[in-house]
Amino acid sequence: MDLVSEASSGSRVLAARHIAAHLPEINKAVNTTLLCHSYSITPDTGSYYAALNTYTWVIFLCGIFLLLALCILYFVTLRAAWSHWAETKLNVAVVLSIYPIVAAAGFVTILVPRARIISEAIAQESVMIAMYHLYFMVLAECGGAQQLVRRSGGSQMETRVLPCCCWPCCILPRPQVKKKSLTWLRYLVLQMPICQAIIYIIILILWAEDMELYVNSFVFIQPFIAASILSGIWGMMMCMRAAAATGARPRARFLLVQLVLIIVKVQCGVAKVVPELFMLPCIMSLHPTVVVHMIQNMLMMLEMFFLSLWAWRLYSSPPGKVADKVQRVVIAVLEDSTNSLEKCKDFDDKYNNSDIKI
Image (cartoon, rainbow, N blue to C red; front, top):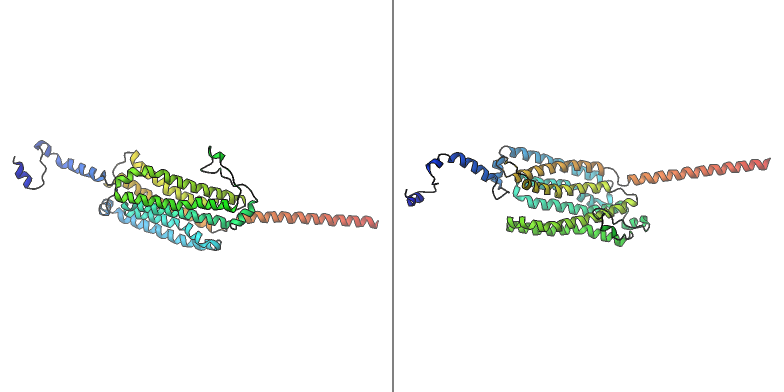
């Protein structure tokens, strides 16, 4: 065998005859495995659509339908909410916008898998900004910061709430509900969008520089993300307790934003961990990580639709409905008691007058 002539004749595979007879079947299996378990777990758009084949149009049409439904539901909810939140229209618009924004970010990730990091950053930042605007909605429901302080009557702020409700957080001081303490709560909530934006800018720089550098550095960045979110949630929980003590009921609206945060952070984190913990099979010649993220984003879009329906039902009613009922009941009881006292007084006067006549 002339190796020089073989090399110059083009790219060929040299193997023994007893091995070469079985190469076609082996190459087919090996090529499928290499295509599935390649180093790049984010395929290019052409290879991605080629692997999806006819399912591409099904996914695209279903995603467009859900996005249109979310946008229509957003404007319907916003129109109903503005009649009850005339003073905080901008805050309500920002809080309600997280559902179509998060769903749109998930839809972009489904269409372009390599845009996953950018879509996650946009979705999480929108939730952080909505949390800050929700703080102002709570204050507006209580009549403003000064009205909240006046209604509190010098009571202490409850600092032993989630996530600082266990030891050693039991030694935390409990300041009075004042304008200064409410300002500190505002700063705790404000740091979330600012810190998360800075952290995700660093993550995007690492990801653009080297994928392996991003994967190795994300473990060290995760504690800063968790500390920022937990401290902001702590501030919101203290604000909710102070508002609930004055008769407001903002807990359901806060729960809606919390659920979006859990879906964006926890559910997305679970989707990242599942392919590493379990040996998943290849589906349509795609890496299991790509398939898991695609399913997770489809599920996230459906969850945003159902949460948007709940938000429509919640924001269609006035915020102070429960407080107004309590006040009316108290007024009715006072009126009944005053009427009964007046009747007793009239009866005593009549009885005394009859005695005098006798």
